[in-house]
Length: 421
Image (cartoon, rainbow, N blue to C red):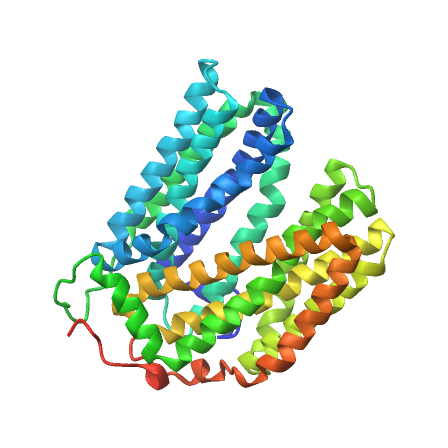
């Protein structure tokens, strides 16, 4: 196993334990989502209420992500991750109990989905801040790729597992199983030996810490580049969740099961890229070259999706899009982790997530409106053209500097004075 291997971070015992726990939990979360959607469809025929499930799940990221980032920098992250996963376990089990007592209705499902979304919103900054503490700097690219691999494995196995378990044991049992899997993450996180802090920073007021984020971003041109690149990427990658289901259902006339297979194909492409292709590319090309090539692959996939009408060929193109998505996203995330100081990692990670999520929401509205006006295939082709133009215009926004940083805490090229000192 070489330094460039996808599996390098798994040589780290603490990360290995955390990773396997999150693989199991993530798979159960995906199965839970399938079961919740199925339960909602049994309780209501309203497409609006069914579609609101994804909206309600994403809403907490916009409401709480910055406070969650500030909290991750002010409290013990290990205990915070454990507490959040206990909240998630309670929310999932609570949904199961309501179902067993026949108390569920569409609105209670939406409330429970919101509560779970709150848990994930508070978990994201804390979790992404812990990973760079668990692994070394040379292990960080592998850890990021493995995080993407975990997500894609869950996306491939989880829905199939949910579809298998719901008829056999019922949706409520799937909810309870998900709650139990959150406890695995609690156990793995609690067993991690947290490193000692290098320096104890003076206390900072909770709301004042938001101003720290603004101050740091204004004074850190490198971080500005990472945020700009993340915004542009998310704006155009949002065409996939916004337009691909429309193309699949309205143009290819896929059945619901085949539509699920379409997203499974994207996950499969991501996994194949992570395992066989990305480590080889990382040893030979710079971050700029990798992200440009990955985004160009997505552009080509968009164009092909605009013209391909054979289901099997469309699934192959979707796999290529998933491969490009994962490579570009992982490189940008590695750049972000190397561009932020450890004393504000939670808030900075929250800022990156908020920028990316905001761009996805904005892009989804743009592409959805374009599809309504011109058709999904024309909107997809237009997204490809605009994405290509943005790649050419953003050529000067280089993230190559992050590869040369001497340490994750120094911030090197973009470090500014700590406003808390």
